[in-house]
Length: 419
Image (cartoon, rainbow, N blue to C red; front, side, top):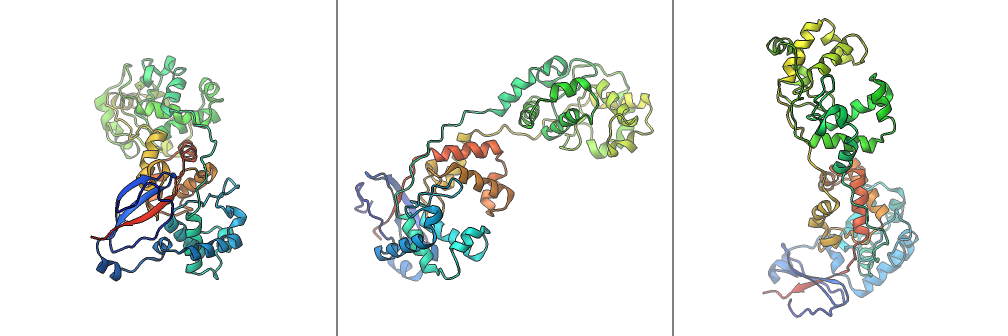
């Protein structure tokens, strides 16, 4: 590594050209990560301008001292002079990656980031030099120690849903495939639709005293787990007879196609899949819409003129179709999510890229707040929006706790000799 040993403890400046290649990372005897870069030529170094955020890696001891003065005046009240925040919703800055800190401060200064407290702290009079110096100062400090957050209990929503489904099997069949005429299949349904249907039983919008009593005490989280479990089961036709004429039913079902799809088409969060559903249940539900016992404006007109025979034929037609598997994946575990996060933020949240933030040993409350802000687009980043869209509140909580427990490591950036 060009003469850099594992006892290196100082932050040293490094040269940059048009391209920078990370060659290696090691952990020094002091626990700091030493990141070696190769700058491929002196001519390129002279020609390529240094972006402002990378100037944070060139600072001198005098500039770091000036950064401390800025921190004492503008940042210490919330983040601490030592960069260790005592406020759970406010992040630690000690040992954070310097270019990242500079870019975030510029975002606050320009109004891209909208928190008033931070906009006030980086008032217009703080020029780029001051922001560079304070970023480098906080990056030069020893990072926070891991929090005492206890490891989150492993929560598998599918297993929770499976346990809840045990009380449903008597009527709806094992794994949600009905064997009792009049009892609906629960497989092959979009989980959002199934949750909506269960909530309608809870509220009394769907009239069924037994279902209401069974679901009254079930939380929204458990409804979601139950629906997820059934969505992941193999989609099969109900193992019940259908008494109508499927051929006549196919011709009469043209009024249903617009919402429920062609033959074995899958359902949606609004409209259920009918393929493979128990025929007697379908007929009873259709009659309930026709007679106003179920209230749905989109169903009212299509079924108003249907006689019992036609309803029976349509139900037989759909009951004989093969249901499709809903487009639902088993949720990732915390470890699997963390592996994705580590691709940018470094192993165990210790970033080796000066532009990407370290997550290790950060306040879990702060990490939760930030992930939710990315998910709602209150904080903007195309990459983070794509990542956070798939996270549930439970995933966010577990990820935040995971990174809060990791050991944070400072980074020493050093250049390899030019060739």
